[in-house]
Each structure stands twice: as C-alpha cells, then as structure tokens.
Image 1 (cartoon, rainbow, N blue to C red):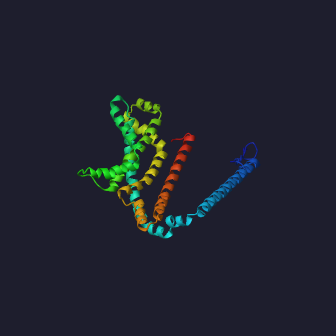
Image 2: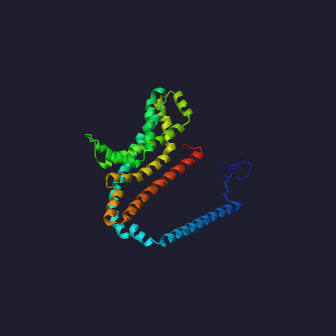
Image 3: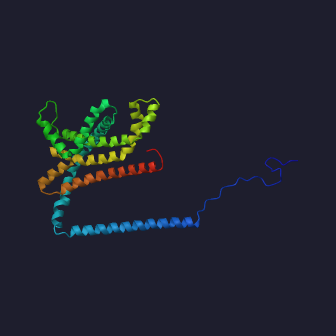
Length: 302
C-alpha cells in the first residue's frame, strides 16, 4: 500500500525547503572596506590638523599685532557685550518680523511679475515691457538708495493717508528691490521647463492658465527653490538697513549703545547674532540643493 500522509511514495526522504545561506563578504571586499575606512579617518585627521594649524597662525598674527590691545578693548569688550546683548535681541525681533512679512510679499509679487514677463502674444507686449523695466530698474538701483528715497522722499510729498513710519517705508523698499530679484529667479525657472510640456498640456485640452498652474509652475518652483532660499538669506541680512530711517532694529540698537559709550562692541554683537541666524538658513539651502541634485542625477522627480 502507498505511504501515508506526508510520506514520499518513492521511498526517498521527504522534501525539505532549502534555506538561503547567510551572505559572507569576500576577503577582497573586507579589505577594500577596511581601506576606505582608513582613508576616511586619515583624511579627517589631515583636515583637522591643517584647520587647527591655520587657526593658530591667524590667532597668532592677530594677537601679536601692535594694535591688538586697543582693538580688543574697542571691539571685543565683554562688559559692553553684556550690556548690548538684551537691547540688540529686542531690536532683532523687528528684523525677524520684517523677514517674515517682506519675504511672503516678495515671493508672491515676484511670482506674479515673472508670470507677466512670460506672457506670450503681441497683445501683452506693454505688460511685458513694463515688467521688464521694473525688474531692470530695481535690480540696478542700490538697495540703500531705494530705502533712503522711500523713507525720506515719500514723507516729503505730504500725501494724505500715506504713512511716515520708517519701518513700513523701509519694508516697502525691501519689497520693491527683492521682488525684482525673485521675479528673475522665477522667470528662469519657468523658461527652463521644456516647451514640450506646454504643448502636451495644450494637446490634452488645458487652457493657457491651466497649463501654467498645473504643469509649468510646479516644475519651475521646484527647480528654483535653492535660489529662492539664497534670496531669503540676503533679505534677512538686509533688513538691518531699515535702521537708516531711524527704526530701532538690532543694528540701530547697537548704534545707540556704541554712540553713548564710544565702544564698538555692540556692532560685533549684532553682527554675530545675524551670523548665527544666517548660518542655519545657508546650510538648509545647501541641503536642499544637494538633495535636489541627487534626485535629479538618479532620474527622480525634481
């Protein structure tokens, strides 16, 4: 009679499911990885030693300079740094608010201006010409002159209902200038989208506005994100220029203390605070750019 349940009728051993053998790297692969780790450690050690040596040389040159003692007392005084820090931080709140409000306005206005510059057809020539004149003018005009004209020139007109607040007028000047820069960034992104994308969208029945909204802009914005973040970093630093009109921001707070005590340490404190804020934004910009480049090199969505 044939074998029972689970018994091989041929009389052989029952089937056993084969288990895959554990992966064991070859000796050559182990040696290669060990060499790479050793080379990484060696490169890190060389970079650390060279950086430390460079820093030591720079410190020695500065400390041994003939005017070091006077410079340290004037620019690096710990007492005046402690006095200035609270006032500078209070003024910094104004700079941060300007960054947020002006940044939002600049992004929206710059995108609209870029779309006006990319309108097609002869009927839109006056619009394109006006947008081009605006961009060329405010990209060429120094920001400090724009702020001076807005802060001191607008109140001189004595227009009813127009504010004289230097913060608002200074922020308006920042928006005027940076909108021109951001508009060019957006325009470059829009024009970098292949024309075939527009043609494909129109062939599917999308209107010009729908093509711009659903096809062109999503691709263009992703392409120009690193450049936009760089403009926001620059805007964050340039918010300190509103102090020209008398707005008490971090820079003007430092100027008040420096003028009162005849010591320039508050300026150094204000500068270091701006650096502390700017560095994370810069590193974030680099990270976004590297991530987008990696995705683009792998053929992914950008």
